[in-house]
Length: 265
Image 1: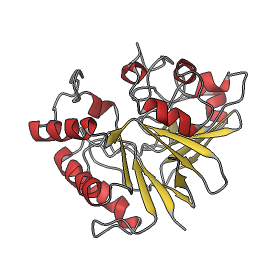
Image 2: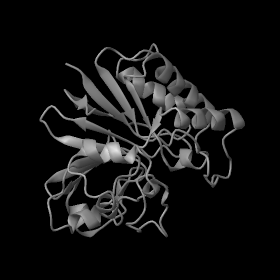
Image 3: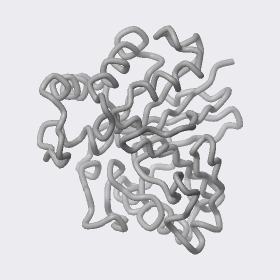
């Protein structure tokens, strides 16, 4: 039986990415049969070698395209056509060209969906799909339907929002807590599916502190070693997988491994 492994934000740290892949049995640059990786992006910026990260990913996209699902994040979006560069130390021309090629041929996606061994569907995006975003997409009833719509690249995906608490931000920019979790917690209907996201987190891993209070904190459970945060939202679970590598890299973290899960086509 196979598995799906979701790898959080890499942020310019190729050694961190290689370490995660080694734990999945891909130390030689080849994923084992039955293992599918979904990487939630922010591949570049902050760390010492963004180009090195792109080189690692390129190998898997070329050798095993059916086993590597590469999503896009806000740090990649700034380099795509029409994007506005915001990072003080921007990616070099070769890296920009590579990202634009991946975007043009569809190797750089907005969303993926998986079905767990228990039969639940999970939507995977960089930052999470907010309640307002889901409603604007005409309320898709399953994670697979939501991923399909998002991968058509609607205008919604480019929305930055006015600030970190803006629930109108798109799935490349929405912040955990006020923008992503709280509106869904206040929704009177049935939350249609769980989610997995990177981009931001409701905790500070460095000192095991919290960035939120109230019901988000009450409904959150943290795996401090793996650097995963699970928040219960209306009978579903939203799991954050951003390990917060920053400039130096996390001392300890793990991909989110879903045994028996499959991609939703």
